[in-house]
Image 1 (cartoon, rainbow, N blue to C red):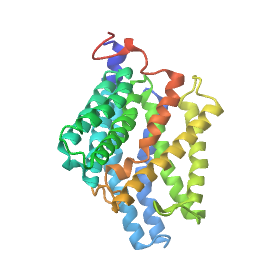
Image 2: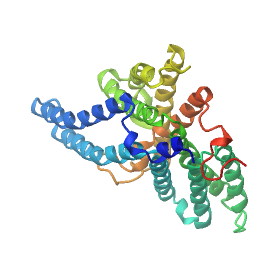
Image 3: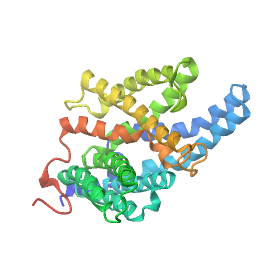
Image 4: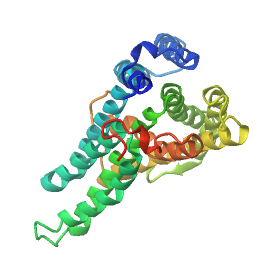
Length: 335
């Protein structure tokens, strides 16, 4: 293991080497300080109802827990970031398995968990070839193992639920961890996650301001076309402006690339939200979990990242080539 790799994995002392990271952290801390003041001010001015005020404060208190859980691992190093993403994948899968009742299929569920653990290992090793191969291999293993109980009735449903769970929470979320194999992973991850979260906020504000036409009333009744378009414009602008400093000096620092990345984040973020909403409506449940007051569970909070991360990773990776060099494998070395 080279000194550069060791510093990337465990070098918490270098967490604030990038000025972009310092700015992001200061902005996030400032938002935590200012948010309750603004909410209280709106309540005093009569702009929000008592019920709405209570809901906003619940969300704020939940963010006081979620914020550090998202920020601290990235600051500590790539090793802790990858482990945190692996844990998030398992927690999201757990909620999915309980909501769908798939946890009753113990053998199949354990296989999905083993697949998520294998994905996490491949990311820790920076073994992109294995990471890529695990999706078809995992799907094939699920289809094969589902035969063993000799229960053809319900076979398609069991296999479909398992492959969907592995795809969304093992493979798609796994790309979020693979970002940590880039030497500049901290500013990239902060940029990506902040833009995704702001995309949700922009959609909410735009929808409240000029949203009348429903976007997908049967899937998510509160989402409007105005909210979606407002988020598309505002998120793309934010991603492009901030992305200029994140990718400065690289081929991605051009208006075309930055605008396309902003569109990817906004469109895929909103589709990820609608994806989990579709699952909830199909199951006739409001939230995937009750862990965070005002937010629901892990999946309710991080659904927007599910489709963004593979799309953004592959677009950025095509030009930065991170994780594709077999000589950079950490645990197994070059074969």
